[in-house]
Length: 98
Image (cartoon, rainbow, N blue to C red; front, side, top):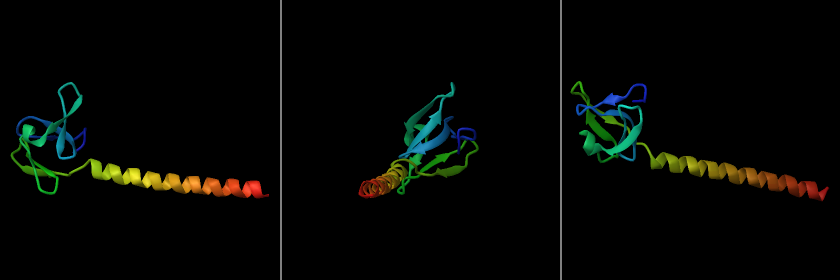
């Protein structure tokens, strides 16, 4: 499921992504909007994934995306920033001591 290969639901929604158990759908003009899974005929599963019926009548489960990944990336960047600042402080300390 990507913007170039959306999942089309049996209710006519073009799903291009998910965000915190909501569906990100592409409108006719190309813009995107976030809608609750139930509005597009889908159901949120216990693990946060979303199941929808495609226009072909198949049930597909879409992955859960959103905050958990964002928090992990933010945490990683904070660690890298702290290490970079620590290294800069050590270099400056040695520069003053010479």
